[in-house]
Structure formats: C-alpha cells, structure tokens
Length: 362
Image (cartoon, rainbow, N blue to C red):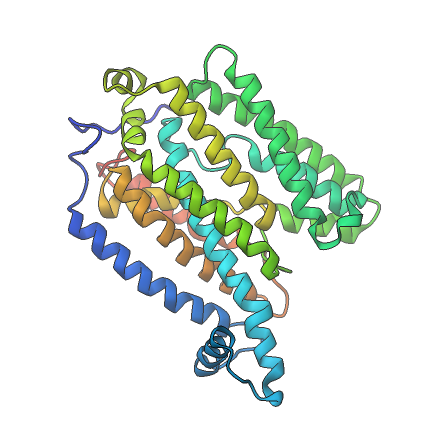
C-alpha cells in the first residue's frame, strides 16, 4: 500500500496547519443552517412533492400536537411517517461515516482509509445477504436484515481484532488484515447472491450492498443517532491523541500517549459505529473517504476542528445524496453508493491533483 505523507506540525496537539478558530465556528454555523434547510428540502422533495410551507406546517403540528385536517392525512403521513425518519437517518449516517473516516485515517495513518477499510462492512454484508437470500431470522420481520448485519459486523470486528492484534495492533497490520478479510467476506456474500433461488432476492441483496435508506422507520433512528452522538463525542475527546497518532507512533509515545491502548480503544469505537451504520443503511461508500479531506482543506489538520465540522458536512451531504437517489430514476430508487461514487471519484481525483496537498495538510 502506498505510504502517505504525515502531518508536519511542530506541536501535534495544536497543528500549525490548522485554520483559525473563527473559520471553524463560521463553518459550523453555516453547516448547521444548511442542515436545517436540507432536512426540510429532503422531506419536501420526492416522487410526490410536498410544498415547503406544508412541510413546515405538518412538522410544527407533529411536534406541538397541533391539528391536521382529515383531507391532509395523506401528505401528513408522507412527511412524518415516511420521509422525515428517512431524512434524519440519512443525516445520522452521513455524520457518523464522516466522523469515523476522520478517526480511521489518523489511526492507520493512511489517506486512503475509510470506515470500511477494517472489513466491518464486508462482514455485515454476509449477514444481510444471508437474510435477503435465505430468509435467515425471518421471525424478526423488518428487523431481520439490520439484526443479522449488526451481528455479522460484530463477528467481523472480533475476527479482525484477533488476527491483527497478534504481534501488536499496528496501522499496517490493521489495514492488511481488514483488507484481506474484507475480500473473504465479500466472496461469501457474492456466493450467497450467486446461489440465491430467486432473482428478486439477489437484486435486493445487491441493492443493500450499495447502500439504501428505503423502508426506514422511526424505530431505526434512535439507536443509530445515540451511537453516532456518543461515538463522535468520544472521538472529539480524543482529538489530541488523534493528532499525535497522525504524526507516527514514536512521536505519539514521546508525547505521553499510550499508543497500543489508544489505538485499540479507537478501533473498537469506530468498528462499533461502523457496524451500526452499515446495519441501518448498507455500505455507503466515499462519504468517510472524501469528506475528511475536504474538511481539512477548509479548517486545517487539527482533529478538534475537523471533528467539529466533518459530521455536519457529512449529514448535509448524505441528505442530498438520498434526495438524488429518490429523484433521478423516479419512481424507482438508485442505491446511495452509486450517487456517492459518481460524486466522490471526481472530487478525490481533483483533490489528488491539488498541488501541495498532503494527508492532513494543505
């Protein structure tokens, strides 16, 4: 794997490449407003459009216990029961993937790392594919797929940890182990799809593997939101450690960081977050790869600032990706991964062509 250029600040806890604090505050404020607007637009836009003023009125009535006329029951149900939980989950997943991407890139010191580099998503795909093609956990109903995906993600996490942990949980061992096991998990998932007795089951499995928020209910939102909020808060408290790890293990050690323990804890936290996110949305690519780099260009390399901005950017981004997935081929839906790849590939290529850009710097 091609080595990456490390951050080169004189003090890893306060990188000299970081932008001014005012730029971070301004970016957070602008993105918070953009997120509120995106939520309303995401609820209003779809194969059946709902006027923006009606969306605001329905949401206000739902929150305050107001009255909606019987003739408006259909649009109200579309807004509150179908689109709002989907939009909120898109925001949660986008925020979580962006935060995990920031952390993973620092932990493994690789600019090509994303939330899926550790093989967790490929492990989750085995459980999800088994449900779609064989009817596993059918007794759980609509929760069968997410339950199986999460359980198989946990199994993948344990396997990666056991294999990579022998001899020390180093960045290289994590990346190589995750990549190798990811190929193995993907092969199992593809075998299940290939042997599926029904073509529709195989199509459903492939659709999930590329990411989807179809069929989301309110029950999916609280757990994912709680995990993302708690996980992101923890990563933020470890921002100085992430700054040190991005400098290299020797530098981090001289700064008093217990490298082995910190990397092990961060691995478990990011793996748990990834497992939950993949369980509710499938594997949505490029969000956790590209957005951390774009945010670093905006606010600098200090992880305290990057982790403040990246989740908001990821939330806004995935809401609009979901809107595009619903509209571009309406009334059919496109997998989210198709849209994120179409946007992420050119962005990443342009980023690589940016003269002077290095991992974590400008």
